[in-house]
Picture 1 (tube, one colour):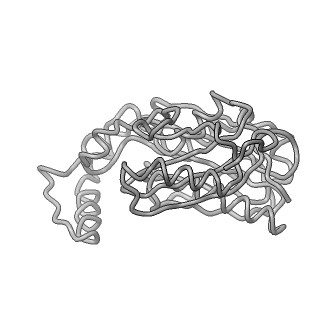
Picture 2 (spheres, helix red, strand yellow; picture 1 turned 90 degrees about the vertical axis):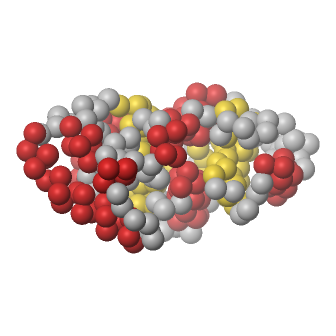
Length: 280
């Protein structure tokens, strides 16, 4: 069973404030400071509220957008015909939800009226989370464990603690949704590859090896982060949704590599847009 993916059917958006702050939330500052301290300790770091806390900003921000709110905002743009037979919902993200502990996939199932679904989230993989999730969906479809998969990719900007890397990234509240299934039109999925400990100097060779392994043409379009050699650059502030958004806007109609490169890890999805000609 071959997965076909039509980037034109992907829906996405960036969001401002979807939730009005409640002044009473500021009374819970001590609870959230304790959460931050425990979170830092679990990762072997000491927590200094003066240096690290973002609790006050988090509680009063006018641009709050939770994952469930973003799902609800995108839902009307998902074609009902595409949602028919969806029996798996996957959420992929890097940055945490605004509301910790919310079951976003269960919310999506209920809000969209999906029945007899399996739902779960994939995170703790950085920017590569949605690429890994896409491949998982393809494997689930190929072995017949589901008929269609709704893949949700999202991140939000308001964090409980400060992080220089996040500050430099300047993330937005952004979300994308796509329904994956066999048959139909669009790009033909060729697979997922990951290479660890790839330095900047080794990227070109690693990408060429991966492209050849997928059987894609030498003129395949590469979409990835700024600085990736030869890539159509994505918008970093869109975080995990960025490569899929770039693909939907470009929709090249030929072979494509969708890539992330973070912390030395290179992750790539391969798609055939036409019959592979001069492959390898």
